[in-house]
Length: 95
Image (cartoon, rainbow, N blue to C red):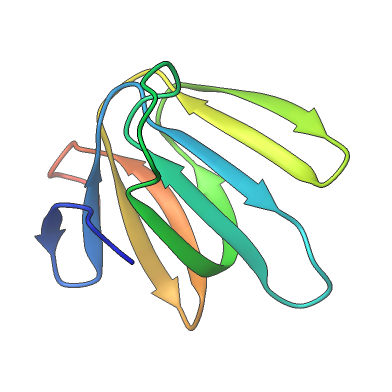
């Protein structure tokens, strides 16, 4: 299940108020992405992997199974390797 809007090869657009629920596990975690934390909608995507650096403005809330990343600006989810992701701003000057 991945209904995120593509922003290029191995890149997906994340809306300004997206929430990423990160479940930490031994090797690979689970990233569940919601377009908006306040909306009562199913997730837009679920991906196996780990979330690395977050360049966009955000807030992190730790919980017993991992953390919730609440974005504060539009950004891009980028695959940086096999099951590794990072969140970058939509500034096209960054690679």
